[in-house]
Length: 331
Image 1 (cartoon, one colour):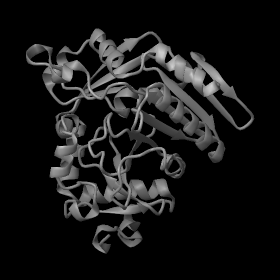
Image 2 (cartoon, rainbow, N blue to C red):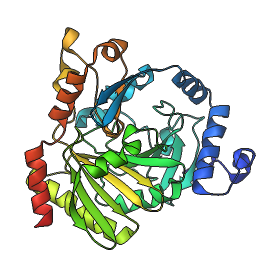
Image 3 (cartoon, rainbow, N blue to C red):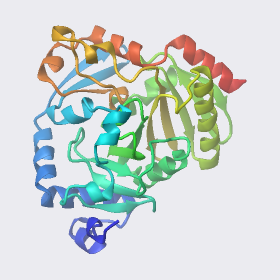
Image 4 (spheres, one colour):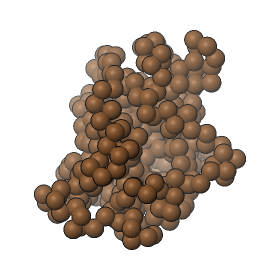
C-alpha cells in the first residue's frame, strides 16, 4: 500500500482528542469530510434525508429515503460483473482523495463516501481476499472491541448485501443508530437460551420479525467457538456449499453482543418486479438492524408494514428452519 494512502498521526492531530482507536476513527472522519469534497457533500446531504417510522409491537422499523445508496442497493454481484470491474476496496483503486488509517494490522479504516449514518466507515482487509467470515470472525471481534466505545461493527455476507463480495471487509457506524441496539431489552426478553454458561450466553429469538441468534460474552475464545458452531449448524441445515447466507451486527461495551441473522435469499421478488410492484430494497445488516434503505422516493412513499413483513419473510430463514438449526447446535 502506498504511503500516500495513509493519514499520519500528525495530520490527524488537530482533530484528535484522545489517542484511542475510536478517537482516531472520529479524527479520520473529520479530516476526510474537511478535505474530500465528495465525502463532505454526501454527509451534508445526509442531514436532509427523509425518514419514517413504522411501529410494531415492542419494536420499530425506520425507513430511510437515501438516493446516495442507489449504487450499493442495485449493485450487480454476479461473478461476471465482479470480474469485469476493478475492486473499489483495493487501495490502488481508491479515489485520490480517499485516505485512511491502519485498523488492527490487517485492515484499512476508510470513510464511506456514500453514507447511511452520520459517521460511516468501510473496513477492508489490506489484502484482496474474498468475503469470508468463518476465517475472520476473530478479527471482527477485535475491531468491534477497539471501536466499541463509539461505533458498532457489522458484516454483510457475500451473497446477502455485500456490494464487494470479492474483497473481505466490515463496516462501522455510530453506536446506537440502529433501532436493534436500543431494543436489546425486548430482544433479550423474547429470546430462548440455548447455552447459558459462566463465560458465554447463546440465545435464539423468533419474535422479532427477523429470526436471529444472540451471543453475549466477554471471552473472545468462547465467543469464536460458539459462533463457529452456529455457523456450521446453519451450513449443514441449509445444505450450503459456500458460506451460508448471514448478516452480523456486533456491539461492544463491557462485553460483545453479536446478532446473527441467517438468510435464505439475497433479494426479495419486489426488487426484480416491474411497475408499481417494484420496491428497490436489497436487505443487508443495516436493514436487519431496523433501518430500511430505499434509494428511490416512490419506494419510500409506498412501502407499508405488510411489505416489510413480506420482504423479511422472503429473505430470512423461517421459524421451522431456525429451530432445526438450534437443535443441531444444541445436539
